[in-house]
Length: 154
Image 1 (cartoon, one colour):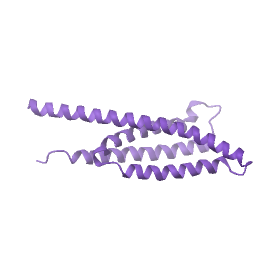
Image 2: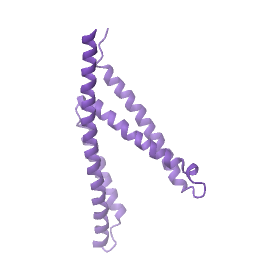
Image 3: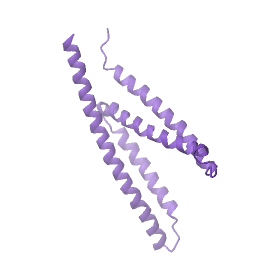
Image 4: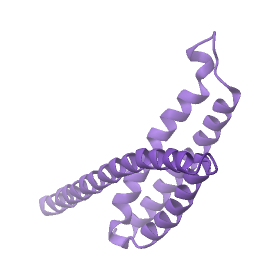
């Protein structure tokens, strides 16, 4: 019985270390994304100025977004199955931060009765709230299914 408990403790410790490593990698990636966003803003403004106003910074940012979508797609599909569960945990954590931001955006009326903010902010906040909630719920379902594969049958 004590041997089984020690095995569970070791497995939990390993999972925690893997989750910490994934969280550190996600933090490093988030820092790189933040730096890239500043570079994208500067590059968009520079392209706008250099072209005499012919290139709109929005088009430049849209092109960067489209490239990021393709890069993200190929990065996610190249993840090995062993890293899937820790990465899903990090994704759920990021989505929970999105939920908090969306709740703040939706609840603008409650925060300040004088200036309730634009209606589109509340609408986009509600859409973000729904999508992030679906992402969290789906992530937990997928994680539970992945962990069920490692349980002993019997």
